Image (cartoon, rainbow, N blue to C red; front, side, top):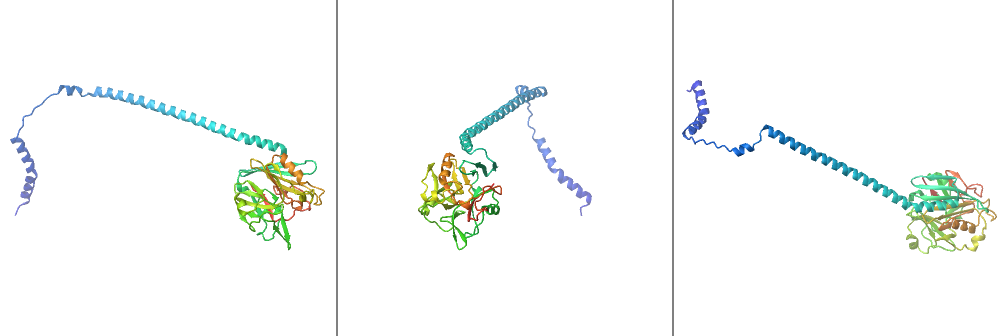
Length: 355
């Protein structure tokens, strides 16, 4: 049996055996040692002083380059800022110049109306209220710029099955800021139905009916432009993409030309409360509501007078809406005109304007 001492000695012998073998090999093989001094290489190796000086030079060069880069970036940023400011100024100038003819035109047509009695202006709409007194009648005007096509709609009392309401009720029901009566209607069995072709929300209420006698359609298309006239087919009207509209008589102006007023409508009645709607060449709308104390033909305005007035105001197209006791002008929740019935008449359709 191997004693503990022998086991330890054996362990150390095994551990040191490789080392002794290596020393033995080195002793048996001793290559000659040659030392060659390369003075050129030795001289090229920089010492501590030379290294410090070289680092200083490199740092100075790097600092110089960094300063140049910073100056270049600063100059570029300044140039970019100046260029941006110059471009913004050009854009602003171009926009101002582009809108200048529009402003001049707006001032010109507004000056013919006078000074507005009240104005509502929002991001969606601008409405200016004017009071007119040409001499033979008293009237009120709304000049309307639609900035959003949804700022004007046509209301339909009830579900179109003969219901009616005053324009003030329609204004309050929909939360509008202004409103006028729209198309004509026919009474039947105690109910009131819109005349002929009527479109609400882009849908035909009773289907399309070709224009007959002196009736004409008037409304807005999906782009917020006034459209109207006589239409012999639905396809003809659909090409204009109507959003809403109603029917009455007659057309007063078309393409800045006076249309012939049918003899019947010149005399029955000759004078009356009237509601008309038209548009300028920049697509602003103009509404005129003439006062009259009855429908007997001895108060209010003639259609020819309103036609002349609209023409002189620079209106391009104009259409007569329902009149007499139906004529209604609501502004800021108040009745502006004087209804000839003494109270507002209930009608099936109204044109409404929203903030």
